[in-house]
Image 1: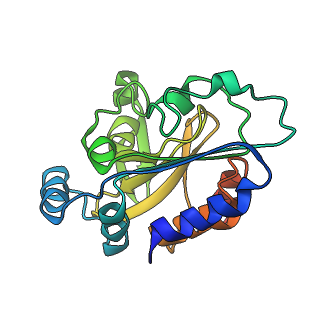
Image 2 (image 1 turned 180 degrees about the horizontal axis):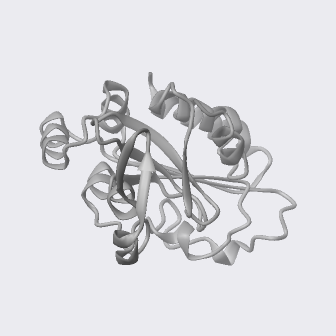
Amino acid sequence: MNWIKLFTEMKDELERNAQFILLHFFDGISDNDYQQLVNESGYALGNDVKEFYMQTNGLQFIYIKKGNRQFSLKDIPGETDYFDWMWPWKDYWQIDGIINILPLQVSLGSNWEQLICFDYQKQIPFHIKGINETLYSYRKRIKPFDFYSKDSVVSFYQSVTNKIEIVIGVENNTEFVQVKKEGFTSYLQFLLDSKAAPEKRMQYKNKRV
C-alpha cells in the first residue's frame, strides 16, 4: 500500500470544503532502526506496521470544515505544517478530522505512566482471557500510537502470549476495548474511509472481535 498517496488523496478530496487543513508526513524509519526498536521493546509488530512506518514514521492530519464555529483557527498548534505530538491531549478540541500517529520510537519507547497506567493500579487485581494479573501490568503493555484526543487513544496492546492487538481507549481511557481483528491495515483504511472524524473512532470500536 502506498499510504502517502492514499492520505494525500483524502486531503485533496476534503480541501475544497476546508477552512483549514493540514497533512504532514515524516521521514520513514530505516529497516535497521525498526528492527532494533522492535527487539528492544519486545513488540513483534506485523509487516503491515513496518510497511507504514518505513513510508512515514508518524502522520499528522487536521481538518476543520468551513462553517465550524466551535474551533478557532487561533487554536491551531505550533507550526503551519505539523504540531506538537501531545497537542490533541491538551483540550477537547472540536475538530472535524484528526490523525496523530506517533513516531514508532515515541509509541514503543515512551514511558506512558500517568497517562495510561498509574501506581495505584498495582494493587488492583485484573483478569483477562484466563490470566490473573494486576491492572497495572495489563495497562503497562498498552502503547498508544494514534494520540488523537484528550479522552481516547488508539494503541498497540501486547498480550501475555505476545499477540499484538489494537485497542481503543474509551471514557477517558478508563477502559480499553479490542477493535476489529484485521488489525493495523484495517485501522488505516478506516481512517481513510471515515475522513479521520474523531467521533467515528467510537463506531470502529463497536465492531468487536
